[in-house]
Image (cartoon, rainbow, N blue to C red):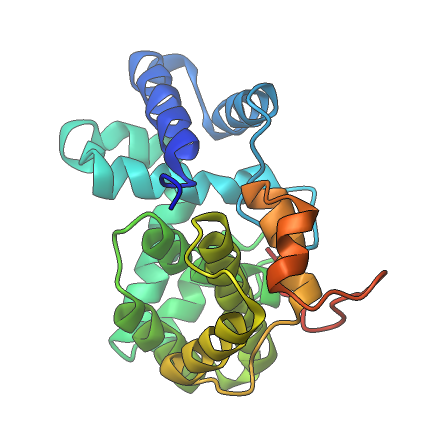
Length: 249
């Protein structure tokens, strides 16, 4: 078994948060995102993402720093100004998700519109909201059962975004399998396939399973798993592509 594949990510988050706290008067969100990008590139670390690499991927990766800040370090209690000045998008997305979970769809949509540059509730904004429970799970602050409840609630209250939600479920499953391969928990194709299908069922989306090629992209980019190891566990096709099911990341 390997140590946590997110150890370096957490260490960098703590380092960056220290910088934010001690320079909060001079740092805005754009500065924080640029600092995050530079540190990731300097350490050869990739954001948590799927196959697509949107231009704002490092802005979206701020969700990782936010989760560590709020749930790992309780910065909201000791340094609330840091969340207010730098992580206001994540705070809004979390409020929107909380509203959805309590059944207040209109309030959630209003908040999401405020987050969207185009002032609309689109697939990109919904995906950003779903990134929060995903990051909480991979960092150990949310259980699989709780994630399943989120997916179900969002699916039931925002049926117009069904395609985005199912795509994000595929992203979640692919990320879990990729991490399992990295940690040595998933070592062969038979177990991988059983795990994939069982997880999709547990999440309540039995048909939303990712392709092995998509899993391979995440395993390579996010976790640095060698291609040779992936071929032992995944059924890969040369030039295989994940088509429209690839979620916005």
